[in-house]
Image 1 (tube, rainbow, N blue to C red):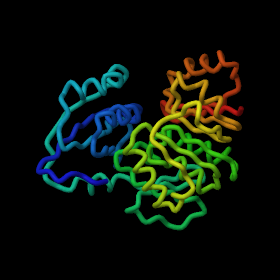
Image 2: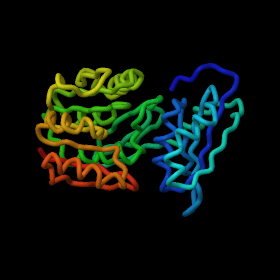
Image 3: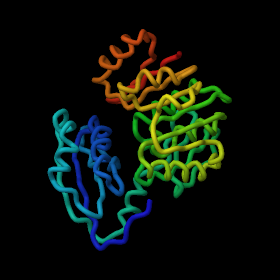
Length: 280
């Protein structure tokens, strides 16, 4: 992560319960922070967890409140802001992120040494893109790839973020692998991560999203967006994995699938998040 050279840093701190951490992280990520730190070290049961976002310019309080409004309506949050001491907060943030084992994969940042393992190593430099392997939605997708993806299948990643899912598929043996994101910075980061993992030539990245011209693929992963559901189903030749769905949205997505005569969806749960696997 490259940070601008400035004299002052600012932080937005959100104290919340463990059940709210993923939602707070998602919400605060919308403020375009330079980095997010989740303090999970030595926490006792029911002790509040601090989620901190760092900035070189502090967002207006109404921007902060608006970004967290939905979370605040569901969970108890304590929101504060502060000026950060002149220290290398990036180094402090990096101390918090350690290698994470998910199914057949080990996700690690480039600054960590990882002991040899039979699991497949994926190195991710997060920068400001979503997908470090610590979030439940990413973990659910990685588990689906580990369990159901077959080497040699084509692969489509809609909303690729850091590129973590595409890289996982490439390391398992994907062919004709395409990944897209509407955020140009995310695509740049994803390409850098693919290079870090030696699979840059295997993945075709582009800025944009799914449309009628996008080639269908055997295995498709996507954060579900209801207006795109028909297109996602039509582009999936073997399996469609939908993620980024809160558990309380389950009924809504099931109704949407039922209207499209899709009744057999395998649902996986992680905390307040779910994913759906649809064999087509």
